[in-house]
Length: 112
Length: 115
Image (tube, rainbow over the protein chains, first blue to last red):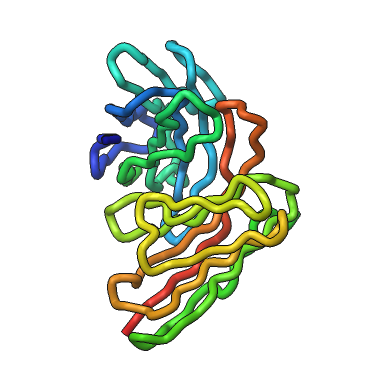
């Protein structure tokens, strides 16, 4: 079966750095995605990793270790607008056509 | 830029009623998906389609039906609504040529309550 784990909730202070972890156990692996979802809105794409290492995009970075089944999303210089749920999703099989499996999401609250 | 459009945004159904959730995309994407999202439960795949005329079951297909007669449209049908189908439904689309980086774009969602 497919299993994706991420913390349910996190709280961080404006201007700080926060790391949201995601661990996965899937049959095959062909990419890991992070999506951001503000309350009452649709998910939007943040980042994609398929090889080990760090992908940086502005204030957001995502890291992948395939051997450990582990990823994290790093958010720097937190802003109030970063308060949202962050969804980790994995393409489980060795095909670009396989649908994603989503984790339950991590609700991040940024406080002043 | 319309992207993925879902209608209606909100709907209340009585138990046993039927309805169709509409989804259309104008990005010429070959892949389309339907998800449901319950509080604290993440996104669960209901059905997906890899192209016109082709549909496949996802993780939670029971109680739903889909069709894909055109590239643009992917309606989701609830035949006999049950309280367990109260949820937020998201439609998504993506373009894939077998590449792994197959980014999904989501519609704004349909909030459905079955009472």
